[in-house]
Length: 108
Image (cartoon, rainbow, N blue to C red; front, side, top):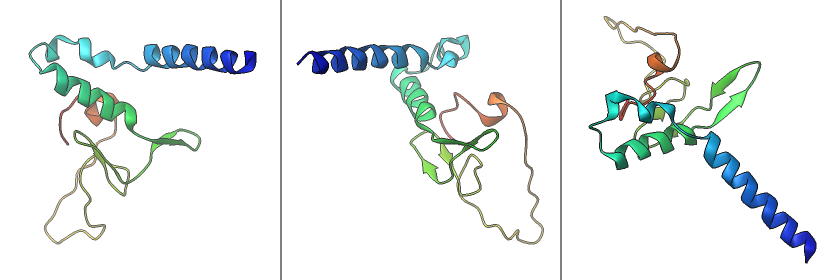
């Protein structure tokens, strides 16, 4: 019984720790002061739910689809697209941090 109680206490402490470190810092920005709190919570939850793998650096796992964010098969944000580029089509890729990725955006 003592072992069970210790496990429960450890689980509660771990849960509280994770709840305190997994916050979306962007939610406190003045940019979102007029945003619906439920939408803001959904954006945060979807962002924190993204699966990542670590191979020398963090990579997003492909084919993830949430209400406010999608990661396609090529690990880019947005809907899937054809690998073969149609004629007279230009593709522009941007490299950068969280602002380029669109952290806090409500859609792709």
